Image 1: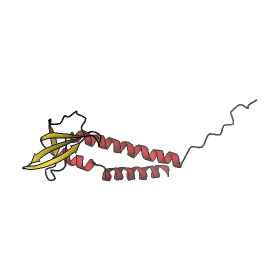
Image 2: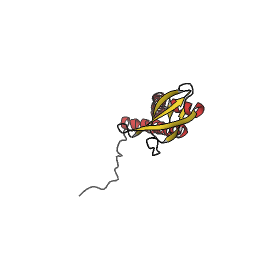
Image 3: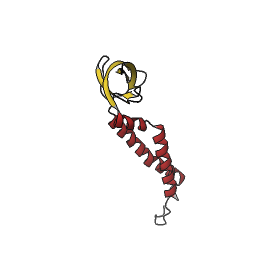
Image 4: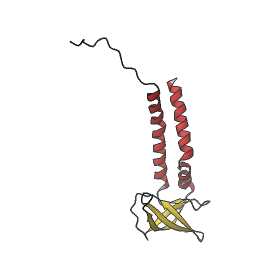
Length: 136
């Protein structure tokens, strides 16, 4: 019974996480993404020091926001990965590593969240031991 509950919750967490996270976007960026030259135009201090960058695809200008680990400066050039069919979707980060990070987090949540819920639903009862010495 507990195994069935665990598997059901794990499946729910995995599906919910896959549908609500940006995993699909990064899978597409990794498989079909193209790269282009971008220019860092600002630092978004209100949103975790995100990088604001501009790039051009087929003569049209686009603006993107990214949160790379690298320390970019305003005016610096960078390589952006974008989707050819929707060029407004772009990142300065390596899509592979962002995808792996998202999958790791989803995997950990899929395994640990149901365990936590089961632990709370079915707490272990303290062992009753008659072997304890009597208090004097």
